[in-house]
Length: 305
Ligand SMILES: NC(=O)c1ccc[n+]([C@@H]2O[C@H](COP(=O)([O-])OP(=O)(O)OC[C@H]3O[C@@H](n4cnc5c(N)ncnc54)[C@H](OP(=O)(O)O)[C@@H]3O)[C@@H](O)[C@H]2O)c1
Image 1: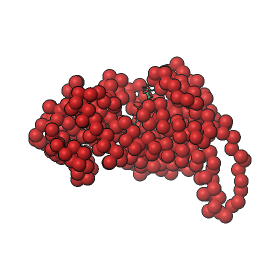
Image 2: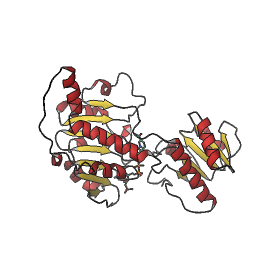
Image 3: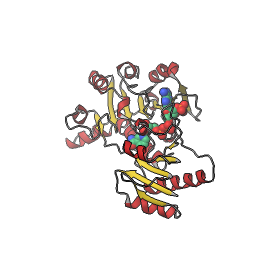
């Protein structure tokens, strides 16, 4: 079995770990003109990769989001396999809980007060005033919803098809989006980027959130219309935002988010790919495919995720 590795990262530890878990495989770093492989492990491969690698049985994406990969031309019957959590769920949950609690417990305010030696207590928080709405109840949305529940905030979720999660008010589809937004004060975005979800967070939708809303975007930058978010931050309808993903990454130096006093920017680190978990998951899926068994995480190309 031949495996091709194609990602702009140091391949050495990946090849070593793959070789350890699939000793029978020949794992090679892809280069133009490389021999045909049976499986590929990729992150943002060039079009040339798919033009040349025509004998692949499956492509494993080294992340959860496949929006960039789906821009490439490739055989219609080639299975694209995404990572299913692989150590990212807990990181996403940490990130969201941190941003949520930093906001609701006024930690940014205390940091500013400490600079001035100010001892001032804010009013006691009423959690009922901060319903947390999670857009996307998938592989990563679900652990985030469970983590937020631990802090006793009311939790709502929105998905494309009906979902059931204990203790979460689950809504779905366009018809229930208005109800979802109007019931949300802290909005967490965990949708995949598809033609249906691109620019979903715009003036019309964000202004339906409860006044003093807070946005945590850890999905994709293209979900948000930046000018609309900035206008709603300036009008006070949105109290603040923690943003991990952007239309252009790295976020350009001149972008207003960098200097906005109520926006926290992080460099797309909410859910990092964890090498050992990723290799273990991919190796196990390759073994299943070799035995003709079904695997989780095969992308439905027609729906875009
Ligand atoms: N910032 C980071 O470091 C980082 C790391 C990893 C992933 N991500 C991003 O995180 C996001 C979520 O990933 P995931 O693995 O949890 O995705 P997923 O498992 O594919 O789940 C997607 C969820 O969104 C819902 N959805 C999709 N299209 C919808 C629509 N048109 N209307 C309403 N709901 C819709 C799905 O509904 P159904 O349940 O009905 O299918 C599902 O609940 C992706 O954008 C990914 O790129 C970011």
